[in-house]
Image (cartoon, rainbow, N blue to C red; front, side, top):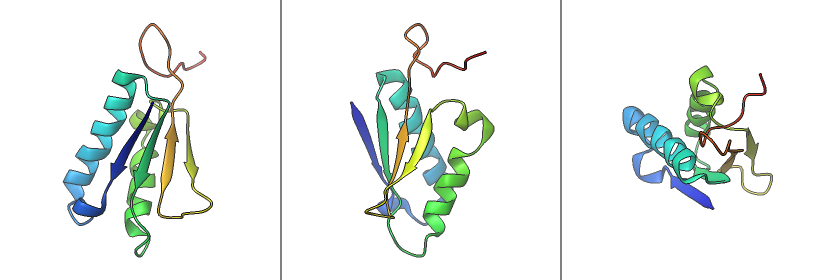
Length: 94
């Protein structure tokens, strides 16, 4: 399963962007989605940087496996998940 979040409609609403990002991450965990496609768009690159900063926060980073930048479309990111069957969250390998 793949989820998709297009940020074009809320590109200038900082708190809504954070809520939308957190919402799609939480949905991916709940539904055990393998990947979330995030579309910040091409623009100036500021929104993509905001998304990457959001994803790099410690409490968010522990929820996913890795982030992939699309080599063919720099206005798109993929967030990949590995789910632990018992919790639905990514295993931490402690």
